[in-house]
Length: 426
Ligand code: AMP
Ligand code: GLY
Image (cartoon, rainbow, N blue to C red):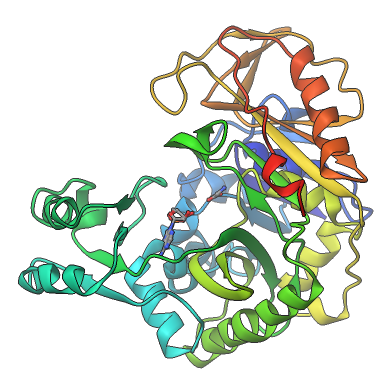
C-alpha cells in the first residue's frame, strides 16, 4: 500500500515509524513531515489544510490510504472533501468527517452528545450573547474553581480554571463580548470542576467495532511539579498504573460503548481515533473532553506499545473489518520526555543547530519540531523532540529517556526532569 500521513509533529513521526515497519507498506509519504519523518518515508512540502495540493499528491503517488494526524484538517472537512471528489472518493481517510470531528471542534456539541448518550461527565451550561444575562446565576450555583471553555478550537488555550467567582464572571464576558479567544469563544461552556486524577484513553474505531488502545497520562504544564503555563504536552507515560484492568473495563462499559453507540444513533459514520480525556473520580471515570485524533505526546508512548501491524489495523478501519484484525500490545512501560525550545510555551527562537542525535542509546528519538537543512538538523518549533524509552518500571524507562535527552544538544534546550515521578508510588 502507498500511505500518506498528514502532519509534522512527534505524533506523526511515531505513526510514520510504525507504519514504516508494516509488511503491507510499499511507499510512505508524510506532508509536510519533519527531519525525523524523512527517515521513515518521503516528506512532501504541503500544508495539512491545502486540500487541493493534497489531492494532487494522492493522485500522483497513487496513495491508497490517508492518515490524518492533527485535528485542524478534520474539523475543516478533509474527509468530506475526499468523499465529495470523484477522483478521491474511494481513497480511505483515517479520521472522522466534519460531523464526527465536532466532538473536538465544539465543546457545546460534545457536552450535548455526552448528556444525550449518558456518558458520565461534568454538569455544564452553554452561554452566548443571547443568554449571557443568566451566566452570573449559573456561576453562583457552582462551587469554585470555575471552568470556562471556549466552544471552538483555540489551539489548546481556550480553557480557563479560575478560583474567584468575580473573575469567572468577568472572564466569561471577555470571552463572549470582547472576543478574547476570537470566534472560538463566542459560545462558552461553563462546567462543574471535577476532582481526581487525569488520564487519556484512546480508541480506534471503524464505526462499528473498536479497539481500546493503551491508556496514557501526559504532563501539560511547563514546570516541574505541574507548575507554570500549559503546553502541548511535556511528557507521557503508558500504561497508567492507577488505570488497572477493572478501571479500563468501567471506561469501556460506561464511556466507550455509549460513545460508539451514540455516534451510530446520530448517524455519524466515524472512522478513526477517539481520544478520551478522563478524570478518575474516586474510581469512576468521567469524561473531560473528546478529541478526534491521537494525542501528542501520548502517541509517542501508545504507538510503540502496539505490537500488531498498525497499517493492518488502519486498513481494518478503512474496510470496516477492524473486528477481524489482530491487536496485541506489549506489557513494558513506555515513557516519553519532550525536549522544547527555550522560551516555550511563549516566544521561541527556531533554527538552532542540533547535535548528539546519532547515539539514541536505548531510546526512540521522535522529532516534534525539526527541519533538515543540508547536513544539519535545526530546531523548528516549541516542542523539538519526544524521547521514548521502554522499561520494566517507570523509573527504569524514564531514566533511559533522560540519558538520551542529556546527549542531545541545542541552544536553549529544556525538558522536565520529573516525568512519571507522581506515578512511581502506585
Ligand atoms: P481541555 O482543553 O478540555 O482538555 O481542558 C484542559 C485541561 O483543563 C484538562 O486537561 C484538565 O486538566 C482541565 N479541565 C478541563 N475541564 C475540567 C473540569 N471540568 N474539571 C477539572 N479540570 C478540568
Ligand atoms: N497532549 C494533549 C493533546 O494532544 O491534546
